Image (cartoon, rainbow, N blue to C red; front, side, top):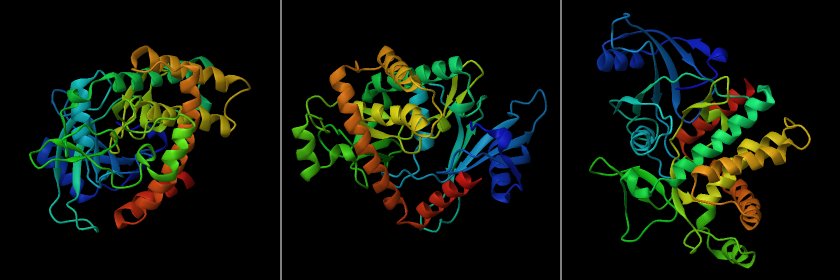
Length: 338
């Protein structure tokens, strides 16, 4: 389920992971690798001792924790199950999920899940051949469009209010389902105040506007959360722990920034390639998605990218308030240094 394994380091297998695998799969863990991707949850790729005729897979992915920045709840396995059932996106199968006895440092039960291991690598776009990179970016846009084109009711999400929710986090409901609720933190599309007045003056719609299409989106859609083969075909969409409801155009702007603009700012694109990749990402999205990116929407996307940067800073500050969040940020910093 996680890429970049060729650069992952082998580690000692914690007894708790051995117990999970033995209880659920009745298998023995031979080795463990910590991938560089997957910094929100404690992620491990487990090699299992399995006979050739055994239904037990040779390799699985175990995740512990990974609370949503919007609700503080661990929702990834539940979201993966819903997205896999409602769409054709290459989402890893959830093999098992549960919680450990006791609590973590924030007093919450530590939740875990075992996932199918998908083949592929998380790409470094700078290392891809130009033709493969263009194919990868177009495919990334197409998959995002396919997700946004799926009606919300297909995911079976409940709401905590009597009306539709335009912006919201996702949490586990008491009956075992998923519910959409007000985000625990600042969401740039539901800002209010002076920012809302500014966006109104420049004709940039926010949540609740008649031109706002509310969709379920990934929440962290970027190259490191995708797996790709040698041709640029995407074989896996990973790390759904921050999935939420937001404005489709805003989610498109965030993704375009990560797949194109940040690559350009880092100096990994040749002259003129930024515009071509942006066009291919938008055309891929429009082929399957609910939005046609006109010139006017292109102007709006530029504003949304600025709002996303402000929201990202607010999210980091919000995450750092809890012990669990500080651990997440420390894992991210450590992997960046590596």
